Image 1 (cartoon, helix red, strand yellow):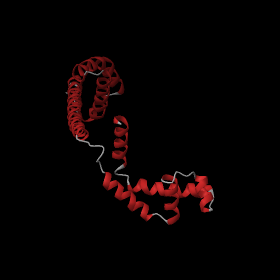
Image 2: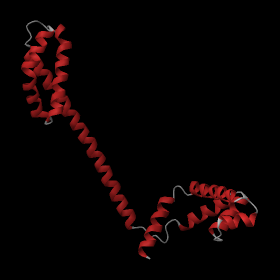
Image 3: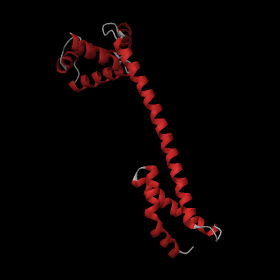
Image 4: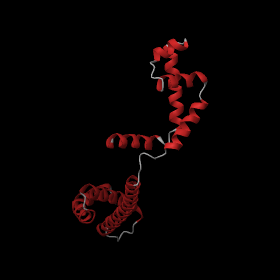
Length: 188
């Protein structure tokens, strides 16, 4: 098949084949892609075809098979989306059950308190002292710096160390603690 014959075949049949493909795949852009890909396949296969092969019929067979492949792929994607939707629905139901049973006053309280004390116990003396003075003593960074005889910037650095250690220690509990705090604030 010459390039001229190919171009003539394309001009004569491409619009009709797009219309046929669109009947099945329902989307114009997908139908156009299928037909374009089908013509490329025909172009590459043409040198190996027998001379008595009707190119129009062969091309229609390619379009049909491409539409089938497209539809099967769509079906598989839909199954995957349905499975994901089912999993998502189960997760939502589990979350609803969990939240319904949530008792904010008791959630992780003793375990979190134990972890906090353990984390504070691992802090270097200066870090621990700065943390207690700031959080439990209600002192400003400047007051702590004056009391300990260190620069204010050092107080800030020690607090950052303390908070980083606590965040690391409580990383699995922080979302639940935030939820409990929020719920406690709403209902009290």
